[in-house]
Amino acid sequence: MTAIDTLLQSDIDESLKAIARKVQQQERLTDEEGIYLFDHAEVGYLGVLANSIREQRHGNKTYFNKNFHIEPTNICVFDCKFCSYSRFLRERETYDAWEMTEEQIYDAIKAYDGQDITEVHIVGGVHPKMGLDYFTNLIQHIKAIRPDIHVKAFTAVELEYMARKAKVSYEECLRILKDAGQGSLPGGGAEIFDPEIREQICKDKCTGEEWLAIHEAAHSVGMPSNATILYGHIEKPVHLIDHMSKLRALQDKTGGFNAFIPLKFRNGNNQMSSIEEVSIVEDLRFFAISRIFLDNFNHIKAYWPMIGRQTAQLLLAYGVNDIDGTVDDSTKIYSMAGAEEQKPVMTTDQMVELIKAVGRQPVERDSIYNELRDYSEQELV
Image 1 (cartoon, rainbow, N blue to C red):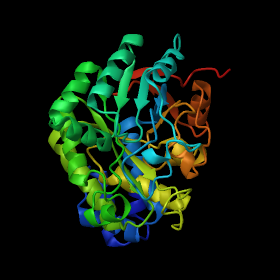
Image 2: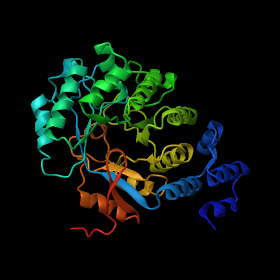
Image 3: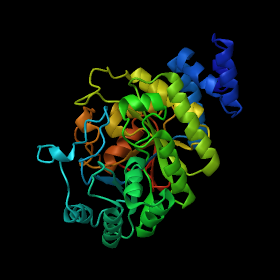
Image 4: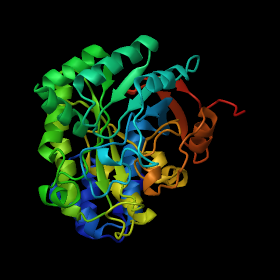
């Protein structure tokens, strides 16, 4: 008897039993059923369904990669109310504003010479003086220094600004970057697609429709991407399901998304600090529902620098099969907002130990989920 069979024999309402049967038969949930899960399902029930899907697809495998982050600047033209990271150009002299020079960026790449890092992740503020030509040149130089590295770069917010300033289409912008050596897109900037929520938290940057159009354009030129959502602030379940439904529809159309990454709102040092952060139970609830609802996304990722190491471990029983990478302590987007990880860096051994400690199988992957090495039998140093 499976865990879902046991669930079906328990004292839960008929609507929840019907949803469990659909999951068991690998049938798609409707938007209304997704909202019903938020309103009526206990977290234990959600964990059974989400873990069943996770193990049916991946067994005990839990993926990570060896990566590092470069954030060229936190100077930004936009004013997102939830952001603790960005500074306006007029604030460039403040102690926590920065603009890396090209040489500093190249030195950061060279610092990993001789190390088996497979990915550099480049995102930052939308600087008014850093456009398409600047970043095209930057990627070309990075690939000249480290030809084997995968460049995952630029949120849709950065790309919309680049394309608009350069007066080119999204497709042309992305083709130029791909020809320079960019391999994929991260998922940032999605926040919540609902226009009324977006108006309140990030009204001056690209719309939800523009975010989706940019990722569709990336997929059309052969550049895969990730998708995100910002949860735990002023949104309601209907907004979360609407967001995921739009992602699910685009994935049906293109198949270009690698992973879905829920990002928890952190309330430190921003214009929404009066909003209380949601509990760990709510984290488990949302990740599990995302695994259940997004039937055409193969991977659900918990970004451990934001969610914390212990919560990331718990989430491996709630649908998550990826916890991102070794990262490095240059990433400040969440540490500046008060995330648990103020210096987010893990060695490979630490990553392997974290995964093994909850009975999962650590597998190193590349940026598009080719398996590189199984660490399940590795002896830790």
